[in-house]
Length: 225
Image (cartoon, rainbow, N blue to C red):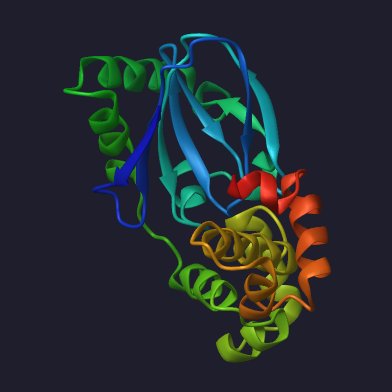
């Protein structure tokens, strides 16, 4: 069972996955986000995925996560997103072990794991560069990389460096991933794939199919069903 809700942390989402009765394959699609995770008493960080992350989940496993808005997690972690691309790492690999042990105890003693994760993030998430939020908003709105750079008064090289630090990959990859999210949302609402392709800026339905296969690893029909 999967559930999610808006978090008290601005722009973030709290989610929980549990109730798997037997070992199963889990496919996590790239979305431009990073997560702070709790599973089996351990704090983990899910870095930004450039393609689908596929893993085996054991029977009875449960996860609680705080999914940060694109570009915001590095402001809490104090680690460039590119260093965590396509990785799942213990928080203790990024922060001093003694501090992580203290935070782990806080989560255990909190009213809920979700509340504990929010407390950790709320205390440390500050100083997010407004430029990062603007980059994400423009690209998610369908702006090209060139147009985004021009709108924000940035050179494309500076935009690329900023994107690597904040999102984990360059702006072209981020734009592709955000467009995939928009396309999937429309497809799941019942729109035809041809309509989805035209609405979200793909050249045609075949282009949409290639991009979905490249980023998600499976056909769009599998994701919709």
